[in-house]
Image (cartoon, rainbow, N blue to C red; front, side, top):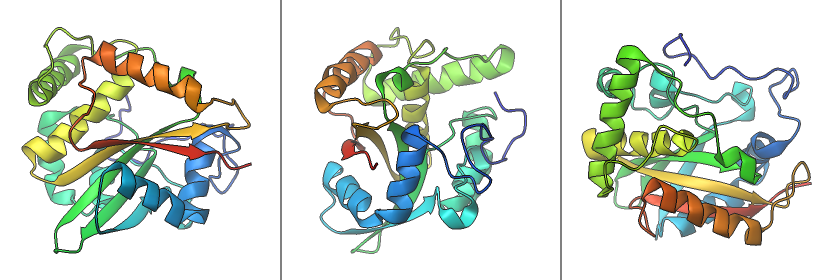
Length: 234
């Protein structure tokens, strides 16, 4: 976990140029869509969440910010939710999820919300090394994950700290914003098809995603969450 609360996510400098532009993979693709094909990704997100009318303003990863990605109180700040910083610290320890993309949402009836995005371009990106926390941090995370399972109606013994921890902690933060803070938040998983760096087809994605959801104990449809499949840009 990152020991610096509230800092932007640290980038692997071997994967990006001096301006923060990624060379390849899902990081490159989400940067491209957010900055150069904004309408396409916004329309896809609206469809996945069944938004009849909503304006989506992408606040990360923007070219003007050096393609910065955010976590902890910085992700709240760019979404205009810095008032929730103390609540988040009580819910989750420092070094939380680093969001691939973030957007503010304005609905036609005056409501405000946000979209949290996790992006993948190949199957191996789904899996990780599990939760590396210990001590008080691990206890805090375990409590948050249990509360999230209860919120989603999932059996408590589903393994959320193993190789699918990266997915689990994203759902936990959706629960924090929705169930605890009362924010109209949404989580969208974006899957890129035929990324030149590591091509993955829709036929590859579908069974892999089904397997992940079964392992996490998720129902076929997770409330306030969507899936988007986008063709990778050359």
